[in-house]
Image (cartoon, rainbow, N blue to C red; front, side, top):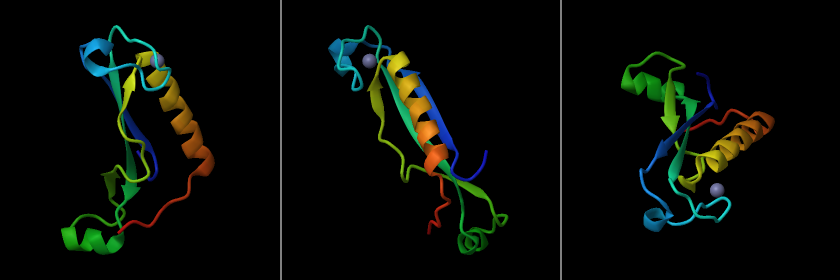
Length: 98
Ligand SMILES: [Zn+2]
């Protein structure tokens, strides 16, 4: 794991579109709805590391700059996940978060 790297999780909600609504990506019915969650690693600023008494350059986890949870087909979410990772690589610039 490194600064700016995504953490993606895809989990089943164990229910169909009747309960959770249509796929947010392709707008079609799902027999099983999944949820995609996105977070990111970031380097904790030195001043915060000092405050928290943790090692300089430690990584934290943030939802900053991440998409909100998406609901839909597993295949659609996997595709979105790949696109997000690709986009992240192209545009990656370390951000200084406080
Ligand atoms: Zn879909």
